Image 1 (cartoon, rainbow over the protein chains, first blue to last red):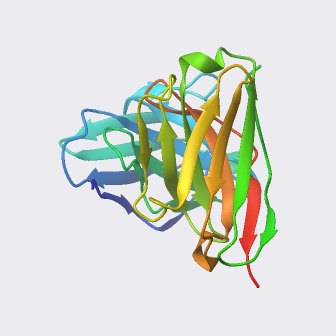
Image 2: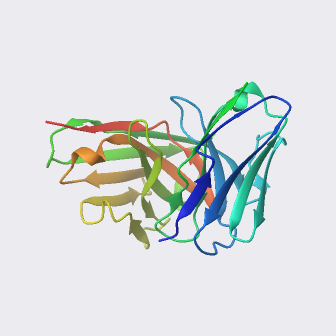
Length: 107
Length: 117
């Protein structure tokens, strides 16, 4: 099974910062990597697919990148509304595996 | 508008069975693979099962293999999850999600399953 190691577990940031969340895959996943945002009491929502492509309706302050088998989600000039829990997912092979999540607070 | 609506959850005793349904609308259901994902209270997301558009390919997480069965009825635009031999650790919010763009691009609102005596 492919392991997705996500960090940090939690993060607090201000409106002026750049937020970066990373997921390292235990093996190559050919960019079958997506990012999700989940707010309390809500279903997860797709932000990024194919490692770098922005999903429809997602603000451009969200972006994705890759370096080797490490994938990153960046939020530039986050808004208070970006607070929530963020997960990565590899869909390269079953079992699909999620990262453990990053709880983000924007102050 | 794409919609996925789960139903069938509830309180069930350990060892018993339950069947979840997910009704899809707003897209051509028969063209997409579908998934079940669950989230235990206060925990992260766990992928449970996948079924291809024509039901030819089916995969399960090891934690549910042999106990859960994913299926679909494309004529009824409905995805199912038959759960048997339920355990306390199966207690979770169960989501159905569409596999599109090589990602889970649409999710339902979730249905709660509680396994307790």
